[in-house]
Image (cartoon, rainbow, N blue to C red; front, side):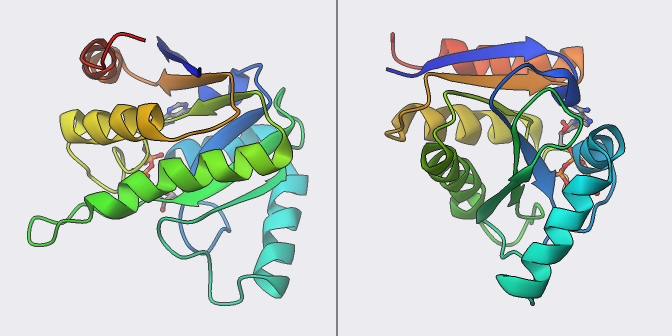
Length: 174
Ligand code: AR6
């Protein structure tokens, strides 16, 4: 049974096997979590991302998929990069956001990661409403079979923490 926790913090400081990056399809960096991970993790992460672009993903990493690299100088062993959907008022892209969590856990299982930290994917630059982002995040992780022992949601603001803690509390008793 996977333990699911929520806490306030900076994902770059987490002592876990893998941290998940809310990347974009270029895999070449950006703002938010992505910027922080590349800044704190150093150039090896970007070098690994460039190599992935050259080999596996010349067109970029599609939305909803995930791929792992070294975590460079971070305390974690791996960064799992996933690309969340941009929020749309006209189109329901929830399945793509759910896919980010499922695919990241699948990659974590492939690595043998026992502990994984997630940010609130798509809830920043990509503008997904926080309560819906939390509902999808918690709902998907709790319904995905995985060998990961602990999934830790690391929220950057007290507001995000509160919303994720409420969504966590709404999960069936586990
Ligand atoms: N630790 C944990 N959470 C953080 C941190 C941090 N260090 N920094 C920000 N957050 P975002 P997205 C929160 O924008 O919406 C980038 O440019 C933030 O408060 O990082 O998926 C990429 O390159 C928010 O709640 O990711 C893409 O182009 C959450 O992390 C695009 O942004 C996600 O915000 C991806 O946008």
